[in-house]
Length: 407
Image 1 (cartoon, rainbow, N blue to C red):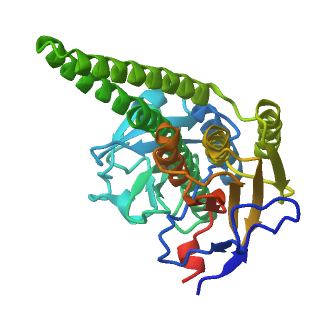
Image 2 (image 1 turned 180 degrees about the vertical axis):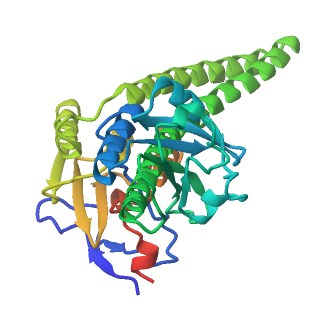
């Protein structure tokens, strides 16, 4: 069931756009708002994977009372294991353990795929007669499994002992516990790297989209007019030649302004104090630069958003204020930041002529909508001649699954 929340209070001094109470309709599970679920990964206490794993392994052999241990990850062929970290082994032993087959020859099957494997070095076909391992008596190996994909195997955790060990002993039980933690750690590191890689790809795609939507179309328009200009010159059509020349000049001017805007957008850094301070500064700049009274109402005491959300919201508000300055012919405007039923709502309205159209601002509204979509939000625009214009950005709290919450 949709819920309607009053967003804008009536003003005794200024007649804003609405002659009725404006409403914000909370999207239902099929309301068309893409849920923004952002997974944030904790920063590892060490950026050096080898250092992090070595510290973990030293702790493990101390608790389990093993002589040495190694961690191997499964290579893409799913048959070979490569060593990525080891503690307690000599250089010769490390070389012997660097690359091994997944199958355990002693057991005659892919033992690691079926759980913990314990063997005596003296009887293990794989290690018998292997000089580097003669100082050890037994070996316990535990597969490192993925919690997200139970059938997926990440690698193998192997411990070396001076004494015989069984699969049911205390050492084996503790080894399994450490293997669970190790699997989680490896999966976390992998997920963190993938998230950073995905974020970089998104950033590059974002830049490409900005250039395509705002600059490429303008250049394409100029190129088409260049062809028409050539035809007009060839046919001695002075009137059309003048028109196409003027169109090309205007397109180049738009392109130049667009490039400046893109450079400003991608160079601009969010205020270290956060989005609220950035909006306050933006409001002060607007008041100094334009003969429009701007009321700024911040109704959120602590706005804790991911940086991407802050950047996109800031640029949307700035574009909306820019449209007011350029097109509204308003005497008053208002910026409201609110938090309603789990949604952040940014409202920019004016009491101007109310002739807003999607083409104003050189693709401004298109870019605003795309910015909103990147953070799981939407843009709502209402405009009536003589009454003014209202632009609203709204998006759910990052990490909130509204399709489930309102099922």
